[in-house]
Length: 56
Image 1 (tube, rainbow, N blue to C red):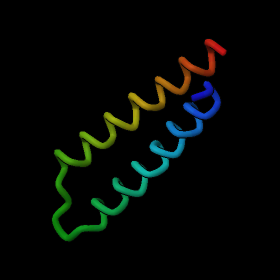
Image 2 (image 1 turned 180 degrees about the vertical axis):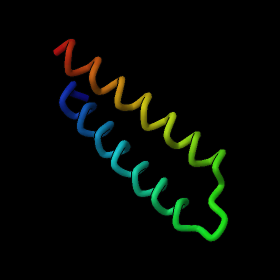
Image 3 (image 1 turned 135 degrees about the horizontal axis):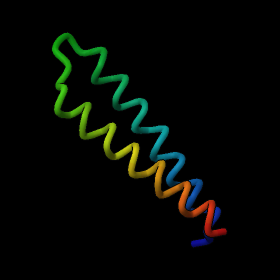
């Protein structure tokens, strides 16, 4: 897998997490723990994308 492909995959996952967070927020009783965990995953992915872009 090329570096650019890996970055693209991470960006896609980052975008999917946005959708998951939004879906959870629209629930009658959103699970704040789930939202927090999703946001942490999203931040880790963002950091990894930045690291990969910096190293290329």
